[in-house]
Amino acid sequence: MLIATNSGPFKLFELEVAGLGLGSFTALHISDIHFAPGQRAKAGFLAELAGLKPDLVVNTGDNLGHAQALNPLLRALEPLLELPGVFVNGSNDYRSPRPKNPLSYFAGPSKVTTDRNDLDTARMMREFEGAGWHKLNNQMAKVEVAGRELSFAGVDDPHENLDDFGKLSQADVAVAHAPYLRVIKGFAALDAKLLFAGHTHGGQICLPGGKALVTNCDLPTENAQGLSNWKFESNEIALHVSGGLGASIYSPVRLFCPPSATLIRFS
Image (cartoon, rainbow, N blue to C red; front, side, top):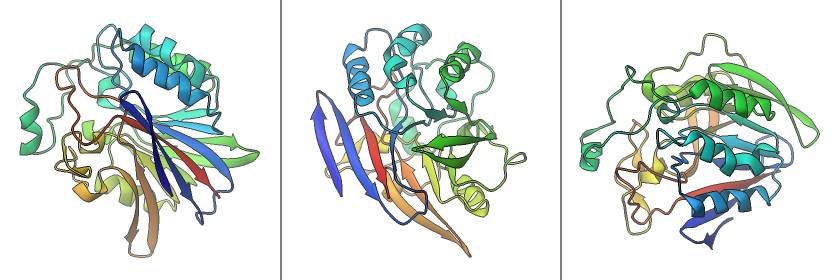
């Protein structure tokens, strides 16, 4: 079952998933907030999401969207930070956006840029961890979710080639920012039952019906948002891609693809 409810320009999707063997709990998947000062409607929607009281918040990165966004972001996320959570970083957790031609995305995935880390990423991660969220950048964690301990594995942003599976082992749930095929396959090999990811913005500029034209990675466009199932030889994994809550301040338009978060009920 998939339900969309309106809250201003934002949507909450609700999804029911059974049979993964993860137990019964609710997870709120947020991604690609790209927060900038003055985004009061987005902050209000994040506060509404906290009112859902999910058992777990999964944040798949790209929280920051402006050089001066950290303090406003932390204020906006404060209600959600009171809940159990896990997170990984995306490229825009390291550097602020620059003007670019949005049509360039149709030429293929955006270029990797690692020479301009101008954001206080270390403080953002400290604040998240200080609130009790578990950092999963190329590392693992055991998290109690609704009375059951689950193992989580995550990687730093694959779009920046920061993903490293070297210290990872078998996990129940996996988390990454960009859902590159190598990452999906890598977590399937670790027997993870589910991978959370973001990065695609659901296509951002879509045809009617939400049909994505690009994913900014090698994920097929038909999997740009929502739940899909993957099989690699004997390994299977479910993938949930968030459509994301924002976009770059230099290309803020979303067409047939509203900013969104997803509440998933597992059983």
